[in-house]
Length: 430
Image 1 (cartoon, rainbow, N blue to C red):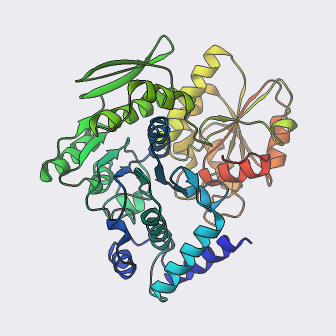
Image 2: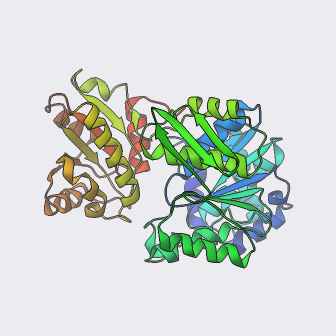
Image 3: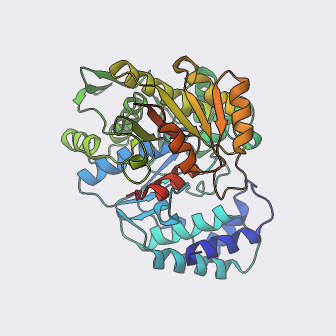
């Protein structure tokens, strides 16, 4: 176990509950630290169900193309905890994150606090200590009571598409979930909203009206769409003819348009040429990522191996659309290697893939005590009409997929599984 992992494990003992959404504990700790959250570069705060990480990746690429130094805070990580924090464009060093975590732990003095609250506090401390031009800050869960929602005056707020996820904590309707996400809206901060269901948008607009915020909404105030292999973006200021996003998938045109809208609506100092450069250079691991390496080498040369972090029904639907597009261009038998956390239901996740009749090979995500067992996922998949069977190890599932000549093999269902796969494949997230 690394020193970082040992610190994180120790921090889990400070509070007995897995989840308790409350800002009071963190605000007390931040006050003891001299309120680093008040000494940050301009903050763009991002909430939503899916596409938060991709939207931040596009914004980072565009801002860096403009020569700006950008802090990043995202979660979860794939392989190493360091991936969650970028200081002025570079992943935080192991020494700096360990020192920050231990200092914050010492100042906390053993008081009750969740691990995410204390790691967010450590990140805010590092961001305040390191000069940069912008901070792109991703919500962990929800919005109103998320640990990141201690920023009182962000430059701007983004809410990506809202759908069903984390219902136990956020509610069982899209409107309830969207109301929590809208908790990051702030009076005086511009807001850009991704494509939403009607009931989700209504909830966001009610929250915005209370704060006298005029949300800039995808599909109404701006939009983006593919045309002749390009991204066409349009808003009240005019039309942009841009290169396609480097990230794979039809949904990435929506995500890229959301980032472009943020650049324009927040009046960021990024030119059209720099927006285009960001679209070409963007990188975001584990999102419809073609894999090469140890696992790919176990498959026939005629096969493909892909990794995607889709982990809920909305993400699965986006992945299925992209796979259908791939299949129209180059038909192949589909094999899904699936591992899931027990906060999601396999039948809901698998529903969008039914028309493609995939073989489903299931895994228990190694090292995750809250993961569904492979046998349960396989049983649920068979109950939904899929050809499914469980496997004890990733290598065994890969070897089974290798028996399907020319298969398109897609590993999905969880970002935690994605991190395990990248590690076993010898593919660093960078």
